[in-house]
Image (cartoon, rainbow, N blue to C red; front, side, top):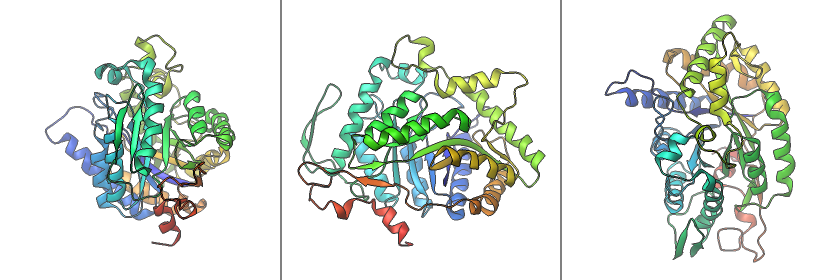
Amino acid sequence: MKFGLFFELSVPRPWTAGSDRRVYELALEQVKLADQLGFDQMWTVEHHFLEEYSHSSAPELWLTSVACHTENIRIGHGVCTLLPAYNHPVRSAERAAWLDIISNGRLEFGTGRSTTWTELGGFGINPDETKEMWSDCLAAIPKMWTQEHFSWDSPYLRLPPRNVVPKPLQKPHPPLWVACSSPETTVQAAERGIGMLGVSVGTPKEQEGRIAEYHRLIQSCEPVGDFVNEQANALNFLYVDEDRERGRFIGERLIAQFNRQATQTVGINQVYPGSAYNTPGLLFALRRDSMAKGKALIKDGFAIGDPDDVISAIRQWEATGVDGVMFLVNNSQIIPQELVLNSLRLFAQHVMPAFKTNLNIARPRPVEHPDGRDGDGDGAAARQAEPAAVGAAREGR
């Protein structure tokens, strides 16, 4: 099992001139400690116009800062929204390559297409086209990273032959992921041979079938990149305390505040009828939970309480077949920072040793191309089958 942090960069009201700066400082202190404690990954969302819920509108800048302040933790773009109105695919490829270089080959490149009308409507994007936009851009970006003469001609991207520079440090390219908040996207991830970045805060029982289906389908995938990233990550809450009751009390405050902020968002299928978004998604579920009076907020599999509670919760996730669990630790800054940092230390001291960590972060399976190339254009397939940072981790560097 691998463990990581997941950041929304929430900024609750009332705001002051330094509110966003303070959230940055708190989050950076958390991820620096996580790096020292041996957490494997950190992920940050991309959202726009979502006041309070997430101010992470330029995640590549925040992730660059994280890369410069850490040494080992993987840097997760979770996600880069691959719709041209948000991010032109060439610009996405360029920025991601630089982030991989600056982080010394630690980038995990997550992708997605947005789930709120606030965002899509703000950019004037037709929800019925987002699936095709995402799929087209996702197919193009690995080729930008591995080909010296890249060209593309589709309804969403037209580019004459150009060399998109720089190229990522990891060869053939960073691991690819997609944010999965619905069963449909889970299938799309498996079909394309990319990681399943679970962004639904559910229970192991609710997610077990989707995870099993993902692992089944990916065995016969047609990879969109030059290797198969066969991983599934789950999203969870985390608060660990020596005192079980205190831990559960503080953990419930964390969950309740996150759910309340979700009520401010507007899902696409609430205002736009169509088949592009078939399920309500994560935000609707959080809104439903926030409005359920007297409902227990700590569900099965939530990593809340004392170390034994948290170990038991993660065992439930381990049994589903997930490869890692990513944690929201203080999305709204309602918990004093010293308690958040102590929770991370307790997790590293008492919970991590109960699980065997696998340093093979990407679990790549190389893809054979008809022309014998391996994705970097020079035919050295076996040499480049494993991302550089994974090899370095195995060698203890």
